[in-house]
Image (cartoon, rainbow, N blue to C red):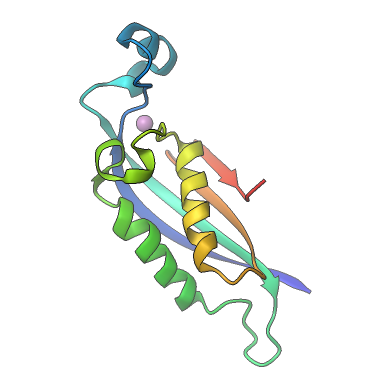
Length: 136
Ligand code: NI
C-alpha cells in the first residue's frame, strides 16, 4: 500500500532566459521578454511529493519534518531571494527555465532522501504555468 506525502514550499527568485552562445537577436526571438538583460522575478511555488510504504510502527511514509528540513536547506536557503543566473552555481551554464529548475530541485532533494522513496517535483512559475519532474 503506497501513499504519497506532499509538502509545499515557496521561494522568490530572479532569472533571465538566454544562451551565452547566441547573439541578443536570436535570444530575443526565442525567449522574448524573458531575455530582459536586467532580469525579472517569479514567485515560485514548489510541491515535493514523496511516495512510499506506510511504516507500520509510526504510521508515516516519511516524517514531514524531515522533508521540510531537506526543502529548506536544499531549495529555500539556496534559491530564495537569489538571482538564479548569477548566484546559483547550478545555473551558471544551464538556462533557468522552470523545466531546468525542477530537474535541479529533484536532483538535490533525491540525494538527501532514502532511496526507497519515489519523488516527484511540481514547480509553479506562475499560478497558471507549472512543470512536473520525477526523474524520467
Ligand atoms: Ni521568467
